[in-house]
Image (cartoon, rainbow, N blue to C red):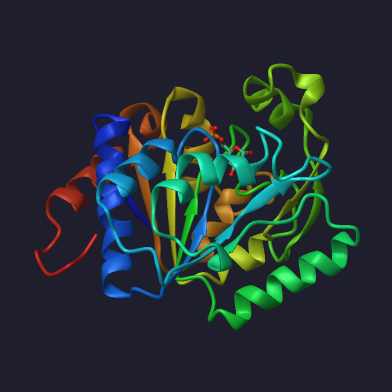
Length: 256
Ligand code: GLP
């Protein structure tokens, strides 16, 4: 894992944006795995400002709530169109977001997996992290080999996401999420985390044992992971100084 610690979320986002822009410029028909939540909002604004060509890109979103329509203001469909897709020249037919209203959820999940495979696999998977270490909506004790499927949110995640819905009662209980096994098959994972409330989850994911009690710790099994953090999210890492030294002394030929 490459751990990049920056003084602020703004600075960490700028580095993440450079990385994503690099992938898009190098491979105009790349397949991007996209995330929602408050963490990637600034990154999406940066990417919009860069005026990149999205016309040949294919995107797959990580997750969606079950039982709410794509038009619901808190659906991840709405989130993605409001915060990114409407502002870039992405082709609607290349955008994939799990269907929270699918009649047959297992069949939908299988077809989502097949679509990722047919698109050639995900080149760059963007990830946030929950306060308990979840990635996508792979809650604690998710199988580290899991595929796209339905999951039930924990009370903690429903509490954490209540601010989007106005109240906890309105947060759906069920979601569709890419599995951890699916995420691990992407060629490069970019994990972003900002703020003190993510510090414990990040320390456990990066330096703790690989355990389904912190689903992000499964990323230790992946050969190419970049983690962009602000000071607060990095504050519980034991090897902070080492990570800073490594980043400050990267050979010029090594890309982010
Ligand atoms: C949700 C999303 C995750 C996201 C997490 C953290 O559970 N499904 O993909 O990483 O929230 O959200 P935030 O970035 O708002 O802290």
